[in-house]
Length: 156
Image (cartoon, rainbow, N blue to C red; front, side):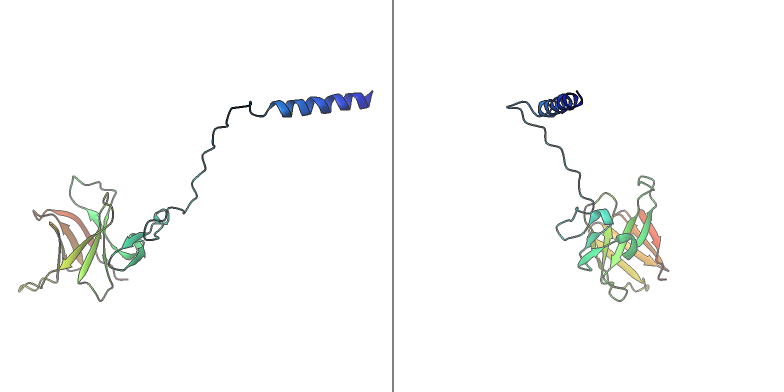
């Protein structure tokens, strides 16, 4: 009797498993694959999910919040939670400045201007914007000389 019960139970289990498959002629919906973390490499090999962006001046992937000078928003029309960053090729080479602004893909490159007779220590022009440096303070201004972003250089 026990053997008959076991055989009945086994045949019921096999029947259930066989019936749970797809109906003939119907395809199963593809299960979307989860994105692989860290697989977001851009055309330069920079991993955005790890905070890396391409630097034209340094010719490498950098984290702008580590390599750059933070400029906080000053104009009321800007999002106060997002900063801009200035990056130079090195501490000794400031002939060009690279600026990363919120909401902008990539960076803008600014050229250092000749020093003024007044002894202005640093001015860089890029398109219709200007970076000014005075006594440790950087400002990023629009074409109307309105200060958009501002930040201190900390050379610790």
